[in-house]
Image (tube, rainbow, N blue to C red; front, side):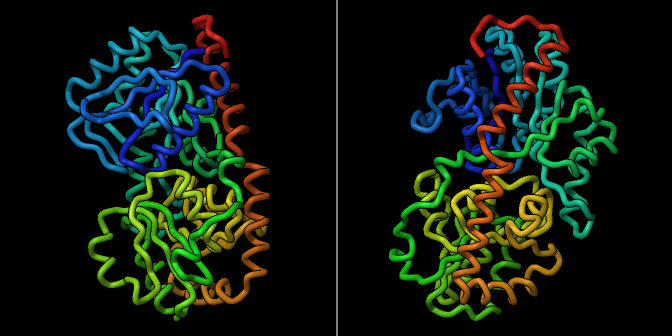
Amino acid sequence: MHIAWLGKKSPFCGNVTYSREVTNALLDRGYQVSFLHFADEEEEPNQDQWPGFKEVSLPFLYKSQVYTIPTLKSSKILARSLQKLKPDVVHASLTLSPLDFLLPEICEELNIPLVATFHAQFDTKRRNLKSGTQLLAYQLYAPFLANYDRTIIFSQVQRDLLARLGVPKAKIAVIPNGVDVQKYSPGPSNLKSKLKAQRVFVYLGRISTEKNIEALLKGWNQSDMGQGSKLVIVGDGPLRPSLEPIYNSEDGIIWWGVEADEQRRIEILRGSDVFVLPSLVEGLSLSLLEAMACGLACLATDAGADGEVLEKGAGVVIKTQRVVTELRTLLPVFRDHSELTTLLGQKARARVLERYTLRNNISQLEKLYTEVLQERKVPLSGRRY
């Protein structure tokens, strides 16, 4: 089977990780994968992490970790490329781009089944401005997602929301994110010796409003964590320039910046004790799953599907509107009780092994591809799958 994957390769974000992990796993199972993405002509592909793809570059005016603005020519280039590639299925890991809305028409004209993974963050309750803004994204996308053969989301709550907005339930597939549990696993790390730390807490993600980083930083400072504890912030974003001068190394806070090297990110997770995710809105955080797979004790808000991931003792769930208050209590407890973090880390990895492995994710995806092809009665290209 030949999959034409439309996704992101840069800038680094959860969508990039999702696209890389899934497409590499599809290649490992014998699929042919063509990768279509927004890129400059000068942008060199990373062949170490993205091997074996036939690539198509789509022009753009602007792209960020959150959204992309294509040029007027992008849709024509995409249509011509798909006509030439003749894939069995198009799978769009939606990049929050105007091109997302044109895909159903393009694929319908070419008679190619179209699958989407909808990454838009959400909150089950409208508790803040960001959760209301994200609901608007769902309302905007729902009429177009109704024209996709399938839309993949990460939780039952997300499925119910799209269904209420008019997407037929039969066209919505719940397939949670998955982690390569051989790669993301407990192991050695020199992080603590490098940082001269006894206990390490880590956040990995964008430094932006919806991630609620300032609440984490305030909670850390108010907890008086002492010299032996460090908070490592891995990532970058629009809020970093305003936050870094206020919350810095004097408080035990280390601004690591973007870490593009996957193995180094794994070493950071392995060398940490606690992962903290204070988001106001989420989908299903891959960073959270990766931390759990590496055996970290995890604290996360009940935004999106993250609370569902940590339910029944796999981690500690905190309320989005009480992040500072709850962290002020929890952080010292996790600093002082290593046996607690060890136990929670074991439970976190067990939960990932039970529900969130990449292997299971790909098996469900294979089943979905077969279903949409049978519904369309489109003959396979004859390639192995």
